[in-house]
Amino acid sequence: MRQVVTTTTGDVDVLKVEEKPDPKPGDGEVLIRVKASGLNFADILSRQGLYPDSPPKPCVMGYEISGVIEQVGKGVDQQLLGKAVVAMTRFGGQSDLVVVKARQMFEKPERLTFEQAAALPVNYLTAYALLVVMGSLHEGESVLIHNAGGGVGLAALDIAKKIGAVTYGTASPSKHRFLKERGLDYPIDYRNEDWSARLKELTKERGVDLILDPIGGAHWKKSYAALRHTGRLGMFGVSTASATGVSGKLKMVKAALQMPRFHPIALLNKNRGVFGLNLGHLWHEPEKVAGWMKAILGGVEEGWINPHVDRAFRFEEAGAAHRYLEERRNIGKVVLVP
Ligand SMILES: NC(=O)c1ccc[n+]([C@@H]2O[C@H](COP(=O)([O-])OP(=O)(O)OC[C@H]3O[C@@H](n4cnc5c(N)ncnc54)[C@H](OP(=O)(O)O)[C@@H]3O)[C@@H](O)[C@H]2O)c1
Image (cartoon, rainbow, N blue to C red; front, side, top):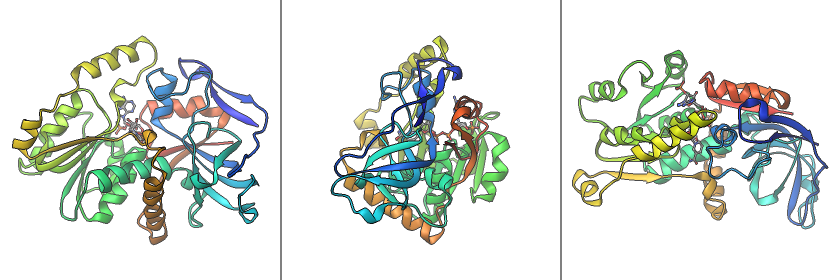
């Protein structure tokens, strides 16, 4: 089989397609022939040497796949052979073949292509945990989704619209038209104007009930200040540090130094909440995650969850796919196909 290997830390030329022996499913496992594999911002940060959860290099990234079951191990229902599925993978998903525990996979919704199905797990589980589970977003409340045009951003928009919230979103201006069409109420051009001043104006100085912030560093402080009373801030990424080489390391140090400290008494007096999320640290909670995935698949069935795949790149084009995300050219998901 072939795999996309991040051979070492560096620029996109460190990504190589390499041949490896085919894996075999063990007890309770299945072998999946991959049709599409999700690319995530974590893969970029890993290549840049800025992702603490990255496996040691050389490594194969990939948290999610869709494909067809080709073999089943002992104790797994033979009738699963040939079934189309979507699965979460603890790395290694950017491969022709992947072995996963049978409980880590779900039936692929028929109305989604393989590429769309591979766009479900990371983006939608993250958005669901942020908005529904931890952010407790309610009908009539307001939410600010930073990077609303990205993979997690568009997933959050689908869920926030279903809840019936008023939606604000920051994004590069080229993405605003698309976002309006997807139902975003108030796009904000954070690249060319101060988003917090614009948000104040739009909310008549009140702020919003929930903010999803994957940018990190000093940005978290700014987001916290933009909350309404009883507002919550969900922190889940440090994309501000993204850069190759020494520049990335320096940006990460700067982001760490500028991160806010939240004092309990200040939270109490201001009626605010802050929380963090790392989906990659939830492997020991499979029942919870499976419950969220069930709700997401239900949303696909009902038609309010619609993963948007911007582009599919072949494994050999993984470098171009990384570049595409780094240059902020994506709207929604980028996937790799064998
Ligand atoms: N904690 C978790 O469990 C978890 C799970 C999934 C993702 N995340 C985090 O969520 C964020 C979004 O992830 P994603 O996979 O959905 O990626 P993405 O949002 O699809 O792609 C990146 C987008 O982020 C924006 N961006 C902001 N700062 C950027 C920078 N310095 N360099 C490049 N782009 C930047 C750009 O949109 P604009 O054009 O609008 O600037 C870009 O298009 C990342 O920080 C990621 O690490 C966290």
